[in-house]
Length: 505
Image (cartoon, rainbow, N blue to C red; front, side, top):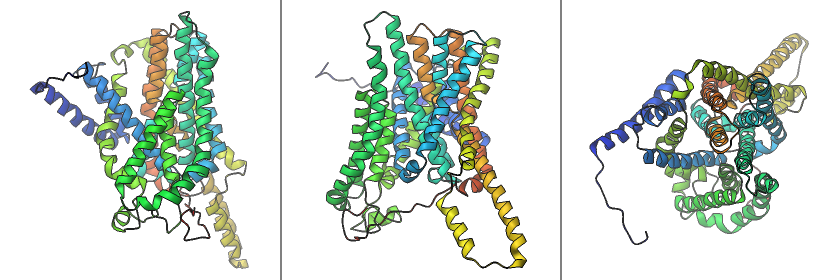
């Protein structure tokens, strides 16, 4: 009641020790699993299982609910950071490939689910669709966490394959959340309520497409010119303060628009990051074009970038508090004890392998794209032109042919390596998959207990398999991943001829 107050009570000693040990083991488990299996998030999920309802239930229920909310805010920050670091130029260049990959990543899990669950295990048609839909989503939180954890070896955000991965994962996630709303509405229609199914299904689809189309248009033609002309040179006076205020306002606005429009707030967070990163001028004389954070803080006419501000104010709480809580909250939601019966284990393992294949197949589009001849990079074209300008003589013609053959083999090796990286990074399902299948099980009459446990097995094991595979690929093949047309791409910044204009791009 307004006007009252919350009486203050000192926390009990046992409660304090439980909280301290919970956060300690979250950090320790991340470090151990990162060292052993190259996937730190797996240890945090395991701690969530142990401390939460699935096993020991050390944490009070209200604490677990609070941690789940904080963890979801951490997920929003993970995806916002991913949007801030996204190369917009690479997104545009690889949009068609990303769309094809995302469509494959949605259709194959659903189609193969009907082959196994409907025809093989005898599950219902609607039940199979719901379980397949939960396995069609790619975990955005896990994807960006994997990209971040790999940054010490290779900057996946700057690679072409990383750009395709981010785009396809975002599209899969949006499609998964659209199907989530459809599944929730199936529960309402089954209860005989007066529901406009066409509007309820169409609303998130229309909202997602509208945000995806309108945001880049208004950013490029309205907000970016206005920001560059009237605002960014004033921002340099206040450095991080002005940056963090703008970032908070933009992120809150996009989350609110996405949530109330009926699409995913995670999609809104990604668009907010991309929107912010596009606003500043890319001209060398622009305030946000700096070599380091220290330069932006030191020079009066320069400003730290938005990424610099995120690193200073938000990266620490995100990495050491909110991100661990997010992955622990996934552990809270796993019905761990009920999974361990013979029938559930073998069905879950078989379905896991099929669903891992259903996402790994997305990577096949990279060599197909290369065969089609549409993947020539600017870097490679420049190298070939340079070779043509060099004089040749008869003595080295044979060696040139051998080098050409060797380079062709290397190109194909890098293409298949990029394909393996893309496919394995798409495997993790995580939070969205669990959310879809739990709503299907708890709020509709279609998903049986056996179907629910089979789906949970696949979601859990795929969320483990994907990051481990990516971690091993990055560990042993980091240099090859960075090379070639699917590796790190040159960031050519457009420069206006009018060097002094504030609105220069």
